[in-house]
Image (cartoon, rainbow, N blue to C red; front, side, top):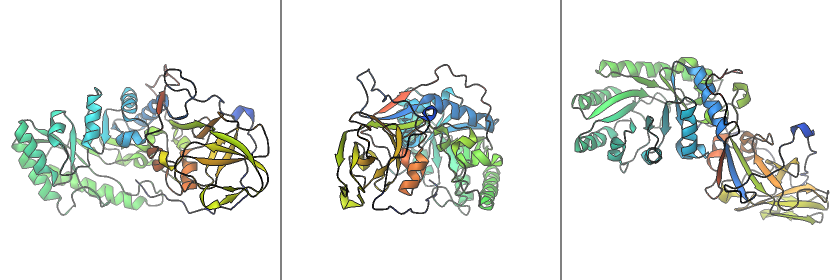
Length: 426
C-alpha cells in the first residue's frame, strides 16, 4: 500500500455545525438501504454496486488492451466482498484474479470460480499442495521453490509459478543479485516436470507519486533486465506483469502482458491530486446506517471521551451507531457524514461502537431512524474525504470496514452494456 499520508489537521474544541443543505437536485435519496429479504431498513450496511465494479473493470480493460487485466480481490476485495466482486470483474472482461494468500484463492475455487488465480504471499504453513491440486498459480520469491517442488513431486502434478524479482520495493521478490540463482533453479525444476514457470513479475513502489517518475523508470528497466536473465536461463516467460493501479492509469509502457488492478476496480484513485472521476471510474462502496438516538443538549455539553468538543450553544445531537469496532478510524474527527438531508461532521472522539454529530438548533433534524451515509456516491462524500480526516489513505478506509457490518450487493444497472467502454477522461 503506498504512503500518501496527508498532513495532520487541527481539531478545534468547539464550533462544528451542520452545513446548509445543497440544492435539491444534488441531494441523495432519503431512503435507507434494506436488508436482504425485505426486513426493512438496515441498521448498518456496506452497500456495493456491482455495476460500478463492472464499469470500472471494462473501462480499465479498454485502456490496457492488448494486455490482459488481473482484478486484485485480496482482503475480501478491499472490503467489498471477494466472491461477488470477482464474479462481476470476470463478467466485465478481467481474465485473471489476484490474491495475497492461498486460502483466499481456495475460497474462490470453492465458490466455483475457475479463472486463473495468482496468490503471492506465503509462509512455511502455506498449503502449497492444495494450491497445486486446485490449479492456483503461485508467486515465488525464492525460498518457496523447494517447498512447492516437494508438494508437486508428492502429487505428481506440476505447479504453476510466477517468479518475483525485487526491483526496488524491498518486500517480497528475489534480489537482482540472487535472481540468476533463482531462475537457474527454476529452470532445473521445470526440466524435472515439477513446476511450470508461467510468468515473471514485480511490484512498483512509487507509481502513485506523479513527481517521482524516474524511480518508476528505474524499476521498469530492472524488470526488463530480470526478464532477459530468466529467458537466458532457458525459461519461456509467457506473462510479464508489473503495473499496479497507478501505473495502469498513467504509465502505459508498464502494461506489458498483464496489469494487476486493485484500487481502480473499486472506483478509487491512488493519486492525491487526481480524483477517480478524472479516469471515468465510479466508487462502488457506500457505508450507511441510521440515527440511533437524537436529543437536545445545553451549551457547553462535552461530547465523547476526553471532551475534545463542547457544544457552543444549545443544540441537537445525533448518535451514529458505528465506531472503530466496525473499522471507522478513531482519529477521523471532523470527517463528513450525510445526515438529516445535509452534510455535517463527526464531533468529538469516535468510540468503539458509535460517534456523535452536532446537528445545530433545528428541532426536526434527523430523528431516530433517519438514514445516514458516511460515504458513497449518493451523498458525494468519498473515502478520500474520510482518509484526509483520519490522516490515512483511501485504501485503508474501505478495506478496514468491519465484519459486523453486513455487505449488501446491489446491481444498479443490470442491463448495462459493458462490452465497449469509451475510457474517456484518462
